[in-house]
Structures are given as C-alpha cells and as structure tokens.
Length: 129
Image (tube, helix red, strand yellow):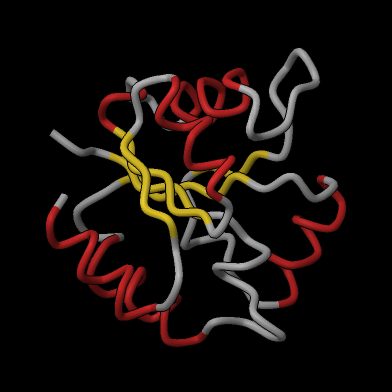
C-alpha cells in the first residue's frame, strides 16, 4: 500500500517557474491521503528558499537534499533517508522524478517510481499505482 509520494524539484515542481497545476493537484488530490515529500539534489539553502518563495512548506511533510551520510540521489541512501523521514518503508513510497537514473535509484531500494514527462502523464501513472 502506498503511503507517501515524493517529488523532485527541478524538472518536476519547477519548470521555468512553479508548476502551479501540479502543486494544486498535490494539494487537493494527494495531500489529504498521502504523506508528501520532496527530494532534490540542489543545496539545502536553495530548497528552503524555493519553499519559502512559493509558500510551500505546508504542502510537504518532509524535504531532503542529502542523506545523513552525505549522499544525494541517485544513491540509495538518499531514498532510504526520505522514506525514513516520512515514517514509511521504501515499498510504501512512490518517487516522481524526470531523471531515469533517479527513478532507477528509487527502484533499487524498493520504491515505485514514475518517470515524469508531463502533468497529465504523471496523473495517469499515479492513478495506476
């Protein structure tokens, strides 16, 4: 059973600006039912500024850029860390990312993944999970 959905920032939530349509979908369709996380390889300062600028702190239950041992995605430690922060096993998580390598990293630890290409494709893929 899926309990958490994790989003990449650059390439998914930010595409030349905030992906307003996806944020609205997360807020209305996903947040009431799932824990929501963000996992990005950008620096922690940049991520905090992004969340502040767009007033998104309430949307995400957890936000991470690196694992405690210093690894970023696609290293398995990064995915294990965000799952732990969300209080879930990796098997209870779905990672949405625009990088095939990052999706493979998530799957290597037991997460499901969705290779993001568009909002509509993402909605359909989530509907199947």
